[in-house]
Length: 200
Picture 1 (tube, rainbow, N blue to C red):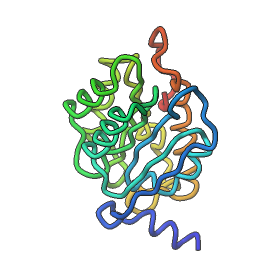
Picture 2: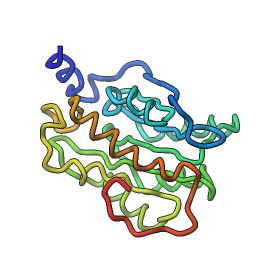
Picture 3: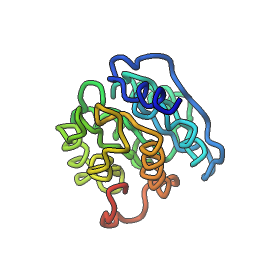
Picture 4: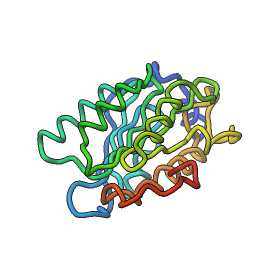
């Protein structure tokens, strides 16, 4: 059973396209809308554990940045944007500086956008991670970098054969990494402290 699950999780993102897997948080850590995390196929196996950690979680295979942005735009129209949004996209297509800027402006100055750096095929880093890190340096109070690429480097057992999709051990560490962003669930802090950990 474990082997079968890992094989499914390790399939290329193009083969993992399908319906949305979503779950509300088991506990809301702040007043107002619960912290929201948006992901692609990498997040699918982690949905339940992210919900238990305190996230309203929504994952779908092959999801691209513009689709995540559209979800946030709908929430804004409905008055349901939380103070913390985590976007874990980039496995499919690319993330540009323009994409990140549009989403930062959509969220406004009272919210934090935490972005997960995506691993490329084989487990390496690419232009998406560079753009995310640059955005974090340019807007340290409002953009937090969850550097999954750096945090997971050297841990081949966390991934299937493509170096991207998660095993069960990978899920545990992925959730541990994203969970650190919950310190920003109330919005930007008064000052941007120096980063001492890859996962914010």
